View 1 (spheres, helix red, strand yellow):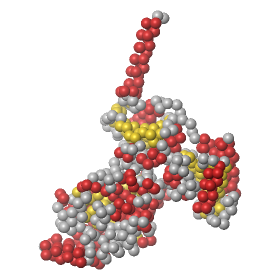
View 2 (cartoon, helix red, strand yellow):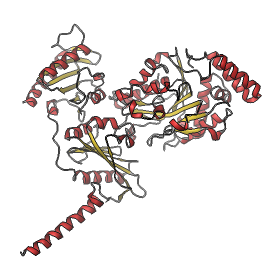
View 3 (tube, rainbow over the protein chains, first blue to last red):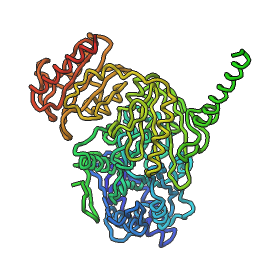
View 4 (tube, rainbow over the protein chains, first blue to last red):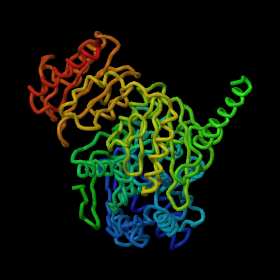
Length: 310
Length: 302
C-alpha cells in the first residue's frame, strides 16, 4: 500500500478505515468520531498514491477462474477478489478488508469497461458491487458504467476502477490509467503523442482523490492487437489473474510488463507495439502513482504456473 | 439493324446491367453485396469522415488518420447460426496510404483478395487502389472464413484499378528479408510504432513524410533497415546529422558502424534518402547492408 505524501499516512489511513468500519456496526457516534478523525488528519479524500515512495500490488491467480470455453467461474472470481483485498489490507478477514476501502458514508461507483471484444466480465462487476454494498452502501445506489462515467459517476465520493488489460493501438496498453478517459468530454484530446498525458485525467476535480481501488483484470489478457479494433483472437490467453492495488500506475506497469513477456514467449522476440509512455509519465509528470518496478511491492497469491512475472 | 431496334437492344442491355449490379452490389449500386454465401447485410452501410471516425473506431482511428483516411464505410453482415461479420472499407487520399495501412501489421499468408491481402484468425485484410479493406468475423468458423474471402473478393473487384506500390519499397534488398516484415509509413508517429528506436523522431521527419523499415535474418534477429525519403539531399543530410547526434556516441565518426545493445548500426544519406541499418551482427555486415541499400536507392532515385 502506498503512503501518499499529500494524503494521510498508512497508519492514519488504517485508523480512519477501522473507525469507519466500526462505525457501521456501532452507530452514529462512532461514525462521527471517524469523520472527526478524518478531518483532523486532513483526509477528506482517501490517500492518493501520488508520487509514493513505494506501491503495493497484489497479483492473484487461479487456474479455475476461466474454463476451456472461456467462461468465467464466479465462485472462484469472488474468492480471488477477497484474497487479493485481504492481502492488500494485511488482514485475513474479507469483510474487514473491504471495509477499509469503502464505508457507509460513501457514494460509490464502479468504472468498468465495455469494449466489445474484451469487456469487464459481468460476473466481476456483480461481485465488486456486492462487496462494496457489504460495506454499508445500498446496493441499488452503486452505479456501474463505462461510457457514462462523466455524468453517472460525477457525484461519487468513492470509485472502484476495473477493466481487463490489453494492448492498445494508440496508447500501447489499455489499463487502469486509460480507463478514466471517459471522464473527459473529448477523449481524442488525449490522443496526441501516444496518449502521453492520460495521467492528467486523474488530477481533474471530477476524479481526483476518489479512487479507492484499482482492479486490473488479467483473466484473459490480450498481448498483441491487430486491425482497426486492435483485436485478434489469436493473441488472447487464459492467464487467470488480477492485479489489485490502490495505485493505478503500479498495476498498469506490471500489466504492461506481463504483456511484453507474453509477446516474447509467443513470438520468440518482442514485436514492436505503440509505446506505453503514458504509464511512466503518469508517475513522473502527473504524480499519480509508481511506475518503476523496483518501487513496486508485488504480492503473489495462488496459481504459479507460467506466471511470467518474476 | 434499324436505329429503333438498336435503341431497344441498348435499353435492354442497360437494364440487364443495372439488375446485375443490384444483385451483386446491393440496392442503389452499393459497393457491398446485399447477399453472399448466405450472409445478408444487417442494416444500412454507415459512413464516417475524419472528424467522426472515432465514433466507430475505439482507439484504432489514429493509425488510419495518419495514413490519410478520407472516409470509412462500415457494413455488417449476418447469417443465422453463424457469427456476424463486419466489413470496414477505408478510403485513403492515395494508393500509398492504402498500401501502408496494409503493410502496417502484415503477418499472415496471402489470401488472393485485391492486389495484396492476408487472412488469419478470422481477420481478412487487403488493399486495392486507394482502398484498404478489413473484414472480421466475431468468431472464426469454416463458413465465416469462406464468406470473408468471398465478400472481400466481390468488393475488391469494384474498387477500380490497382494502385502503384511506392517506389521507396524497391530500395530494400530482398535477400535475407523476413517475409511480410516491411512496414511503409507516412508519418513519424507511425514510424516510431514500427521502429521503437525512432521514438521522438530523431530523423527530424516532417509530420507528413515517407519512410519504411523491414526486418532481416531469422526470427529473433534484431537486424533491420530503415529508409526515409526527404524533400531533397540537403534535408536528408540534416536528418542524418540529427540522427547521428541523437543515437550515435559523440566520438563516432559519421561513416563508421557503431555498436549498441542490439548489434551494429550504420547510417548514411544518398540523394533525398536517409538509410539506417541496425542490429547487424558485426560492423562489416552493417556496412555491406548499407552499400546494398545505397545501390538500390540510387536506382530508385533515377
